[in-house]
Image (cartoon, rainbow, N blue to C red; front, side, top):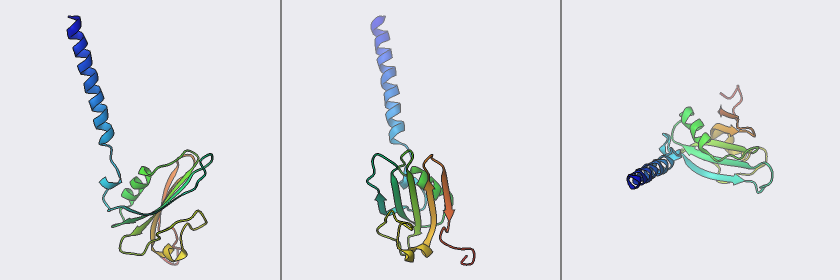
Length: 138
């Protein structure tokens, strides 16, 4: 009887491990979202002891706002850091390089930026539609 119990416990442990591996490998990713998201440019500061700043420029095929927010949530984030994602339609011009300076990219791309996602230092998120358009330009 003790040998049977041993095999039962080993089998049960094996099934639990297989389930955990399956769940880990089947997590959703950016490729699973509608919108054909493609990363065009990326910037990360070299500060590893303080706040980490990550900036992404991403092209999308459509303005599905909820998908954009979900994609932003999937992006890496460091506690006390900041993650920004700028979205551009894939038929329009978009920046190929980013910088930490105000604006993050050349002003010529501001008018074609359709959304900005930001995750702040304490994990608060915000998605702003048409972030560079003023009320008179809308």
